[in-house]
Amino acid sequence: MARGRKPKPRAPLSPGVDAFLDMLVGERGVAANTSAAYAADLADLSANLHPAGLAPEDATTDQLRAYFAKLHDRDTAPRTVGRRLSAFRQFYRFLLSEGRRQDDPSSALDAPKLGRPLPKLLSETEVGELIAPIADGITGEIPIDPQALRFALLIELLYGSGLRVSELVGLPVSALGRDGRILAVRGKGGKDRLVPVSEPARTALAAYLPVRRIFVADGGPSPWLFPSRSSRLGYLTRQRFAQLLKERAAAAGLDSTKVSPHVLRHAFATHLLDHGADLRAVQKMLGHADIATTEIYTHVAGERLQKVVRSHHPLSRRKGEA
Image (cartoon, rainbow, N blue to C red; front, side, top):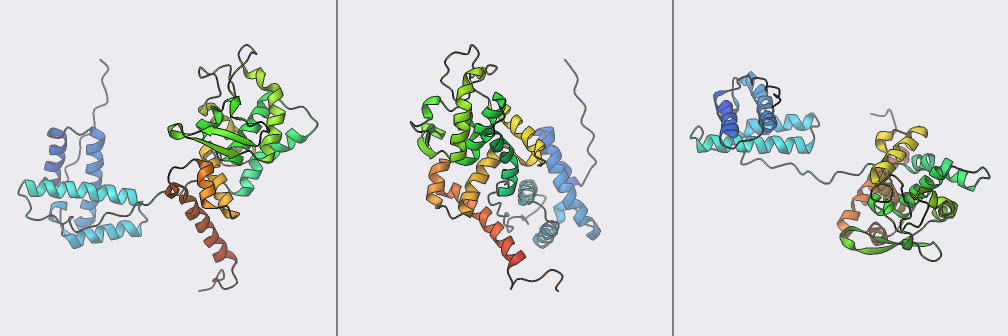
């Protein structure tokens, strides 16, 4: 059996903290990484209390509030603040159960509101830089490689119809309407919805369909719109498409870490709302069961509008003014 690395010995913090950490490992059987995380959180509190000559087990509610106020001043992420408060609560409950304290100073503290993280987003200009060279090639007179034609349709459908990447790569040919203007998409939970196909996507579709059979192993029939010779699924994998998208982003001079299939879905929704689309219509196109999920995009659009107002409105504070 291969030997793993021995964990580094933990420096003692205080009698109360050491007893708590020993209990976590000995009685609860927590993993080494979990124990180390608790130790780090309590070590940070200990360093904060040290100038006053106090250990974590001696802290009052006011001192804990002052500690969390400092975290706020440092712009510490709400999730980190919440994790530390949870660790401290478990620590003080342990001290109570052991008779080392008669009260819990953390009980009066409120956990931070985490909120929903805003999605990453590409601007309309960035999406244009990503798509324009592909679109220009399709409508030009120079023949394009079949791989490029397939990718062009993928990206036009993703940004133009707001599909999930799993819905996109797994589209059957039968999902296409008779005139190619509507896609029948089977989403999460087997729920079907209809989404419009943009004009650029229809142009890309017309260019791609004549070369589609090239991607089938024996050149024969395939039920998939994006067949693949190398995929065991029979169609292009999500991972391969994400890789192609990042390669295209890098070629366009964009930060490839900002670009993913899901980011383009976010861009589809936010750019629609920016241009006055109805929230319910966007919800239906995205396939969200709950409109609250769609409303996150209104927050993104709202933040962008606020920045525009601050930067350009004549009554906003000018740069350089006190």
